[in-house]
Length: 292
Image 1 (cartoon, rainbow, N blue to C red):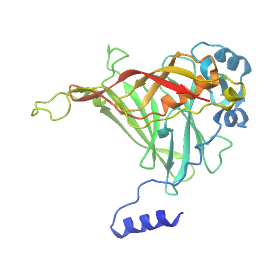
Image 2 (cartoon, rainbow, N blue to C red; image 1 turned 135 degrees about the vertical axis):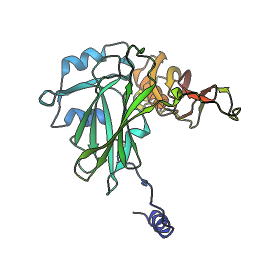
Image 3 (cartoon, rainbow, N blue to C red; image 1 turned 30 degrees about the vertical axis):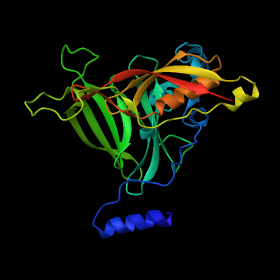
Image 4 (cartoon, rainbow, N blue to C red; image 1 turned 45 degrees about the vertical axis):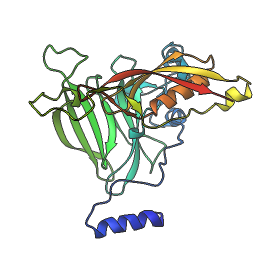
């Protein structure tokens, strides 16, 4: 541990404050996940399905899509892109770095399985969490735990508009994840309306990008003398300010550049849209300019 971090932790302990989960370096920051998945001894690559999804117009910009499966464990899906910073995190008493890699089964509900990789043994996945209904589910790391969220729909409720979600907390004991708690809570933008004083927040505002993610100009495009380009990406920003969906609207004509634009869009963090003083989902068009 660097001296400056050690000093900070020591000072917090003297003050009676528990140190938060922090680290000077994310060991997964530059990981090539397609390579890891393709060479994981627990997984096999389905060439036919990989080719099928690589040719799908919806995923062509991030080709080659790779389909991996473990039939014995009933796991399978395609991997195209690593979404957000919250997909990485430290867990357990030893602050072990973990990564949650999403696999999609090709349906319209999002990720179907998350493969959990540990920095201690990054060549093969340590565990897998499978989606229960495929709709509105997510995985992220928070305060040393792994969190799974699942939208809960009341009888007859439209699938677009869940008002509650199940929040499952997994604790890591140094060897495996154990389910710690399960709660059903209101989704923030559907909290019950209670009589209250006049709001002091801005009644309505659009989302604002909090970080400027500059896309990387691909070396392959530079070597080919491709030149400058503008790429437009349509993004969906969640009520907590993360990009949950990024769709290519205007291609550069060079898929490595398009992929770089989509990756930058998904890494952008927003101050979310507010409607009637409530954080809500919003859709926006982002433009990325590339210069060799």
